[in-house]
Length: 116
Image (cartoon, rainbow, N blue to C red; front, side, top):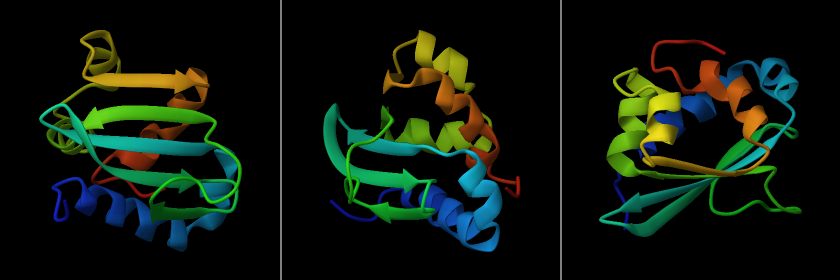
């Protein structure tokens, strides 16, 4: 499946990481996003903020420090501020495995209007 709404979110994150790689590296983590639609995984995105690089697919070396599972629509709502990350997690809209505390450093990356 291609042309997901969240692709734009990841494209924006990609641009931000390219513009300010040092700030991205300061997060120092690898995040794997499993994007779902109708309860099925439809795409994966990796935010390798150690290298830093953002790309479609699973991590190229090793494994992710943190894996996040979220629907396409919820990912867009999260990035636009319509959905609070903590509320999404508590309601089960966002599932996180691995280093949960590392996700706190991601918040500035995900905001639609924020620069890194």
